Length: 334
Image (cartoon, rainbow, N blue to C red):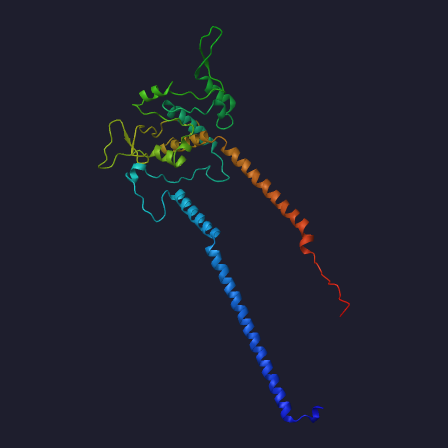
């Protein structure tokens, strides 16, 4: 039958087929363009909703507030805002330098020889004015002294005890359970003996001062003559690390003031370093034990974490690696 058709008919049919294929190609291209346009508009709408949603705004506000608070905590001032104070920076005291203490690292413990020397400096120099109410003689056992040494030190001090059978108080030698004695019987006596200034208790002095051990060390070694233009009242001393510069406590550490039992040269900086180490221990006697427990806890929890990862992989590997096949039922009508 094809042989009977004229050539013009065949040409017309081929032209119609070509036009249909071109129309279908244009339609497909337009459909793809519409799809791409719709997908891009949908993504832009999602992005816009992400930036304008309430949760995103709250998250950005919290992040900004947290960043400003953390910056203020680190540097003591708001970022990009100048500080305005009624006093100068000298009135707040010179900022101490950061010293490389032997117990400063995460895995470092106290230098117990330095603690022993620091206790000697405290006992011979600082105990004349400052108390150490939170430390008992027994706390020295195993840290800087043996039990017999601490017992002998305690027996050298007379403590008021009682009442006895007659209802009277009496004096007795100290015991390991007794706390280190105070140089003054009460606060009024302490002020009267120091021109009205109250010597602070040194039990928590490292924790109670900004800068901690660095500040106390700088204070003990920072006594200098007042600069030109600075007037210091009578009975006061100039120390740039103390707020205001004028401090009631005079310089107490001088070279060779004490004689160490182990032969260490008793320079001013050495004595300051030892007594600060001792006061740091007094403020945190559990320091070494806490770090030991921390290391044990890290090892234990790391092992438990590794075991939990192994158990999780063992339990879930069967489920995560299985394959699910779906075989639809065959329609017998077709």
